[in-house]
Length: 188
Image 1: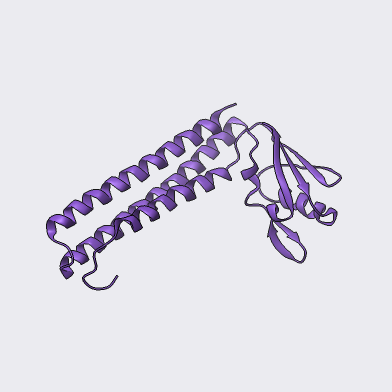
Image 2: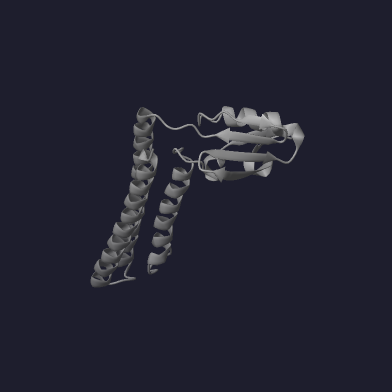
């Protein structure tokens, strides 16, 4: 930021929104008792001499709540896709049927549900920290702008209040997302 430049709060709001979006992406990769196409988003497949995302070599669909279907476009990478899904750490065992893989989603044990809840909580806390860091950066920039003479003290205080409102809103959205995910995890 150049000297005597007025801070723009929308930049900080965008960064907070990105933290909330990142949390939702992380939650998408957490396995619950239900099938979800986003469950396989993080799976990388050894194909064509390089590591590529699963969705680059196959289409993923969810025909029923406890099953995922993966339709591989090239018969030559079916085995690689199967290996990648097994090695993903999601505890999934695909059944190969020609160029398609049928992945039954086994029900989660109570212990595994508790573990997933803790993991979801950690993800949420990481994003809350990210939001708070954005708030700190914003407040530091506001103080610097005041010191440089770009804004007056009362304007800085007003903007700090706005930053705090943005922070509270982002943390509230993170908490809501966590509550929703925990409920989803605990459903049998």
